[in-house]
Length: 229
Image 1: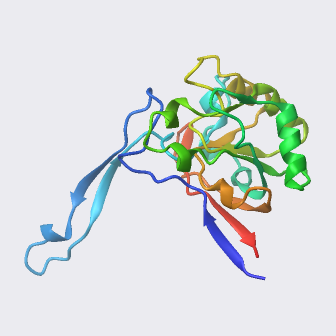
Image 2: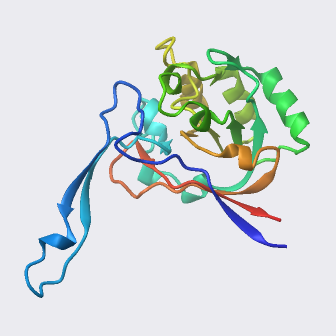
């Protein structure tokens, strides 16, 4: 049996598409090898200016929970961001649709997998591969209903993840029912994952660690899945 590492991240670049209230990513020249004079040691280095919610990232509980004491990203246990994961297939649902509990249960049954306490649950839409670079990336995705957050929390799901800029239909409404439910239940999520089609209907190991930003309400991650074949 061999182990295969699968990149589950979207590219992070100046072309990354973000919700309108986040600034665009800037990757600026700092030093180039051609800057060196004579025998001086040369370096390549960049200055990166970006939102901590650009491309593939994870929300701290404090991002959507306004209560004092809601933890920042560096205050959350590292165990939150890794573990055994199941990925279910919700690609059938069109943009503007909110995946319900019944939809989730059907997709879970179709996966042939059993959801266990402490699992990470990921929702495959293949959104980046289907829409990146088009307006539909920002306004053509399906969401996850707030009731699904309560369903996951009741089953002790540790964290969940989507391949879209938000589990909420942010291009339709500013109500954010999914984020509100996350605040109520203390359950957070990964956004802008990618390539979940490569792990759909499987149980595998997932790693998506945030940077140790202090203080910060979220962090970019490099998400990976490790499968046994």
